[in-house]
Length: 319
Image (cartoon, rainbow, N blue to C red; front, top):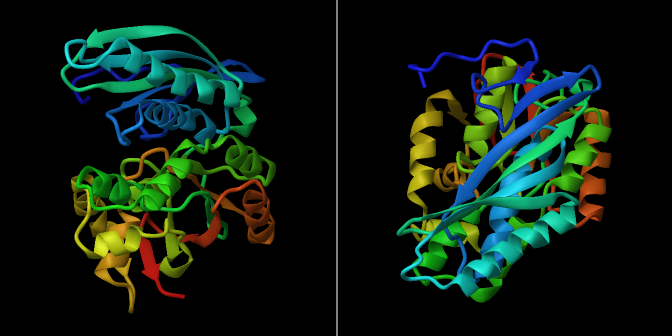
């Protein structure tokens, strides 16, 4: 990336420099485009479920910016020698399920031959420039809200190793296929200005980047962070994806681990997620209402800590 010339336009409201979830380009004082692309390898065995997960994961970037998705193109890498077109149809139907649920159109796409299958979407949405959520928008004094439980990376790794039960896998799929549409609407209505979605860099990685870009620090109560049932026990048995270790190697220099916080706690907070929830800041007086509204819509949400004055550090505390 250092060899590329950075774009220079006053209408590029969010570009690559801040490591945010999507690019945002202003069309007028009242309208901006949100543009993103994301695709993943299979994380579950069922083809249609994988399609739903991948599409929910891709459109999540638009919601993380406070936007509304409008149109998408499928991105497909497919092993035509090993996998049938019927199976690909199931994957695309999964993407269509999410598009219909979220109210955006899938208008085509592009496919290439690839030994390892991959699926996702390029998504275009819109947002009012004054209601944009960015990873640089956290403010000291806010409460930190997380809208989905952690543990996806641990559970999908356990599935690959055939060491997880069906109920735990079902809970993970339910979480991954729940879109962030309602969570984004709640965040915007509550006056949030800073948000991101929790995906491959884990809660610590994504929240840490938010803290750095916002010029604040974070205090996270490890006991308040929701975790999918069964994930903690799997991690304790050593079922941890390689991405989690890479996440922790990158972020731990900015993390202070408080008394009573275990290595297992830290591992779960760094767990690499697929189609995770949003994490955002709101004024403390709104936090309980925000969590209650999210829970009423089916989310496993929690107030997990606070935004403090600082320089990008994260304090992990118990209680």
